Image 1 (tube, chains in turn cyan, blue):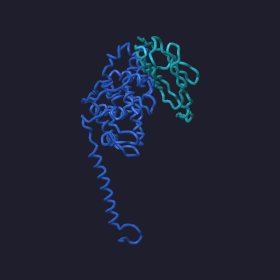
Image 2 (cartoon, chains in turn cyan, orange):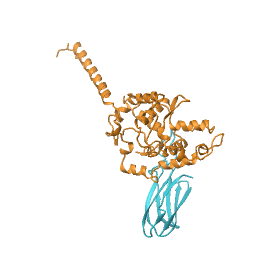
Image 3 (cartoon, one colour):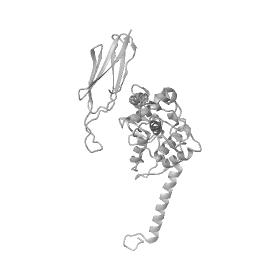
Length: 106
Length: 274
């Protein structure tokens, strides 16, 4: 399991616009580079990211080879209710890593 | 024309021209000798003062700094049992926040038992081999960088304080000699860029003063964490010199001199650089 850093405010006021920051350790190998053996290094990228807020999708992104290693994605949402934010990164092989964060909305 | 008609200069003119060439060469030599002076202590700037505000913001926010991914890996490794003794770093050293505080700011350090200085990566491997009875981690491996970053992170905000004494001085001086020596096909010394021409542009980037305040660094160009030795080897390739091998005493001496040169400056590990 790759290491991920998630920054979600622990508490927020109802209706407040909050910033969410995520970063996951991944090589994001483009497939265009040549290794020391002279053979191309096979492409290995995360191609989808989805964030759900209490089960509802609030943000998603498609990722491509031009995106850097350890992709950092930040976005905004409105704090509506207390609950769980779930983050899912899916790589080109279909493997998904999910991580969650709690938020208390007052 | 005063020549004999074959297009060549008369003998005395050729001698004069050669003499003039020699003077120019000598002047060029004198020029470097005069300009290659150390940066006054109060004019030193960390590499983080030469980077864009965006990159600086990335470094300063732990949730944006990609180097923190390695720091967290290092924290896990710190607690992982390894080697024949099945001991973790934590089993002997306890909480890194306490036992490793300000340690990285003192490296490279002279090891009396070896009679030479070692850098932080080498020190970690010495303990892995001697205390954990485990294999040394290869230079630039993910795990060695992660452990180094985790340990160095415990010195963030603290002043660099390598020990200068009778034993370490010759090695620091040997490092200075390498820093000031012209090398490679470009015939450039480290000092010519980083002492004499810092703050000017080299292609798109600013030439920094080469203070190793934040190693291991996350370099955006590398897309990963890397050691000071990797950075030094990169610069040597750039002047088209043959880089010293990882772990070579010359590289450690150079690291030692650079940390001495940055004495008192603030540790930033894990720093982010372009």
